[in-house]
Image (tube, rainbow, N blue to C red):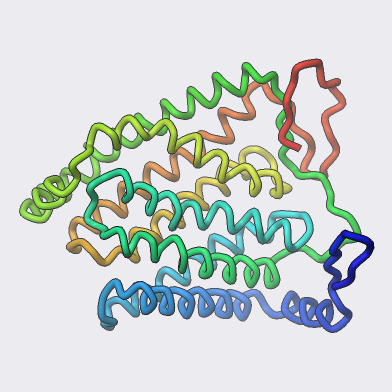
Length: 316
């Protein structure tokens, strides 16, 4: 770390670069075990800090599963991304923290949910620490080799502002429809059939159901905003990028539901399948809708030769 005038510049020392090189040269299975173990330890600390429940063998197994799923999804994403490590870590942090902790905790504060406010606050604070460490470790293990300067992303959308507006409106409608569809066809049948008492108690605690429905379009826009940094980092074609985003959203929403400890098994299973399903389909929809009519650069980062007209906006 050095200072030049009023600018603070962070530089990796030779020892740091040597350590990163050794980590990246580890066999993929070893890196996977290291990353999943890191997530397991972080989640265990998270649980202990927020005091969600006493530790049982079932919870330990759930955290092991959550660590494995998190490691697989993050490794697949980071290994297909490009850019400086700090930028890639920040992009991964944004989407994972928003998906697993920030948005679910935010929902608690405007809905009468089953999660106490104190635990929601713990999710925000400890979740940030958990995901920050996880993102840095994931990037160190699976990220690209450091380069002198960042390269362009594989996905570059250039559209008029009005096109952004209608596409966001369409995606907001898609997410709201998915929210209703998976709730009615997946969660409710499971909950009503196998745990009607728990389902009735859960419904009674949610006092602002109308607000939940009306807020879904804003959730959709928030998800897209959280996804933009990682979309800019991926060096894949649109089809692979859509699958990557679907895996990110579905995978980490699934992890979030796996870690929920304030509901019965059948309610948790119903929410898990509902969340994974709707998030995965929405992730596929985001890239497909955004790239419709937009100009894409090649995976190597070469921008489209078509000129950008006045009044256009780009994700660059």
